[in-house]
Length: 253
Image 1 (cartoon, rainbow, N blue to C red):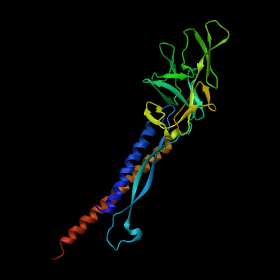
Image 2 (image 1 turned 180 degrees about the horizontal axis):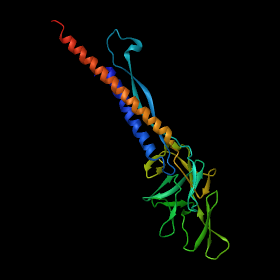
Image 3 (image 1 turned 90 degrees about the horizontal axis):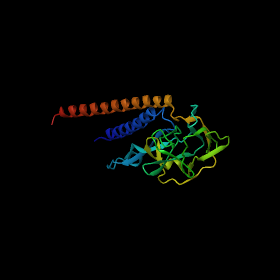
Image 4 (image 1 turned 60 degrees about the horizontal axis):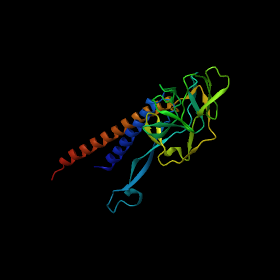
């Protein structure tokens, strides 16, 4: 295959993967705590010309290589919900939750109570405190969550606060190493965790996605136009090759 076609094909393959990343961002523009992904590309040089008249830079063929993606860990906007069980993190920490027998992490603070009075995520995963799952009594009311994560309630007719635990907030030395599992959950992967003492909780709020919907739609249009431009270039190359073969066939032997 001609070099021009190989280069065009490499570009189309990376554009297709970039479109998948953008489409996933757009689909999660309203997902609480979602962190957007972005594509990484680099130039890949390959020496395919072998004749002596191709020297120096003329030997190199420049392809487009998809190196992967990187995550934007910037904080999303906080939205008030007036629900005392909802919590948003100000800072770089993550909530620790228990799911499928293991410990995972999320930024989605849209919480509720299950049938046994335990604090759970929207998917029913247990929200962990420093001493295990946060559990409320049937007579608890006036739930209050302090900025440091301490959960207090008034129990029955009591006038003094009762502590129900302290929301566990975890930070990582390199959040980019967290592994996305879907359903707004992350696994620690190769990232090292430690208790977070700098982040604070804001009760009655949830963190929204940090996706810039307008920017993502603009990039989507750019990718579609780039793909069409490369397709047009490949068609021109194909027509040129076809025309050359037809003209060579007319050359007298």
